[in-house]
Image 1 (cartoon, rainbow, N blue to C red):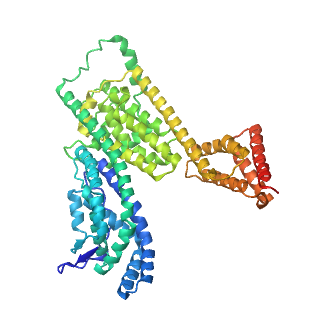
Image 2 (image 1 turned 30 degrees about the vertical axis):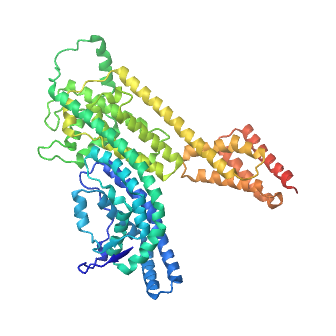
Image 3 (image 1 turned 45 degrees about the horizontal axis):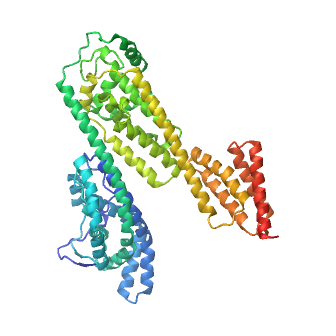
Length: 564
């Protein structure tokens, strides 16, 4: 790539590079999820580029015969090596600004220096622009689903090869590197970054598909709730003085209201936090005022907002709030769901309470989208603990952000709350029975995933090795199940799991090696460690004896095969 200097271009300030800008005010959670997905995909491409760039430039400086090129390569290598993170932050921030076309993004863009050089793309960059034009069109189609759902401007062109080149040029200019440096910079960009673009776009397409699906589901639920609000406004108020006409139902309703009218401590704490975080705002009924009203439902005093609500009409909304709290508590307390994700899951509590107050089908319809999303969030979270992969954790985070998008307007919730009816005990029992079945399915899915990962490790580590059958039986019957149990109890990031894999690798190395190469003390130490780990996994004494017999048989089989 070459540039033609603009005589009117101002010298950029090296202090202009700043971290990635925060979310634009009013940006929906789906847009925030999109920005994180783009940042995650871009980081996987540009972080290795900036980390490897200094060494590549130094190699080029050592082989070129041009003194000016040597000087430019050496200077740029030192600049990037001094702070590669700053280069990465600046690139991510500029692409983020180009991607999100909000007024806030325009303000941020105006504060960042832009090179006024005219760009001339190199042949590899032109080929990449033509090669990925169709993919950029597909990305734009996916983004269009998000744009329609959240009504927020998003520009796919910001992710095209030409746009990435412009961003890199502007970053170099902002960090006080001129045209001479740009030529060697883009020579490396063509060879190190352009080949990574297919993987980048593939990763991004997968994330956008998931986000677009969730955004569409969120939009469908919001339309449903809006229609429901209109119906509530048109319908006359429900009389509160006349006794119910269906007397046989009365005991069940009374029992339900009595057993579910107490809000759990976590939900109370959440409402108190919202009340403190969002103070009253004049005549606008906001989340803080709604939280104050919901807390006051437990008392016999007037609601802080001045809403007239008789004591007998408070039982139904109290029941809904209590059920929503129990729903989330039981999901979070699942032993397979990582405790460290608790704060992330807690962000769903207020939107869940709001939906419960406005829509009883959250508890009565198995296919309710919000109910399904909460269950899927817990499944993704539990699976991420077992797999330990960044992708799994990322998908759980995206799903959590989509759930937050179900946050309903407080005045709409207030109106629905005034007309809420109790849910029958039969429906409540069926709801929690359904959730129990969901927890069992989640358990089975996580166990299956743990088994799959252990089988994969066994296959990868035994592939190409000559392993005697007693060792295969030992691994399949004893060590493999122990690894599954370890993975379920501690997760993929725990040292117990890594230690178990390390012992298995050492065992395979010793069994696959010539017998004369195996020191007696090394085998004895390995056998003792494996025996201790099996015993710690609560393997019975008789089965432990059988396992160690198989281990010894494997050693003898190796001796017979390899010779003395």
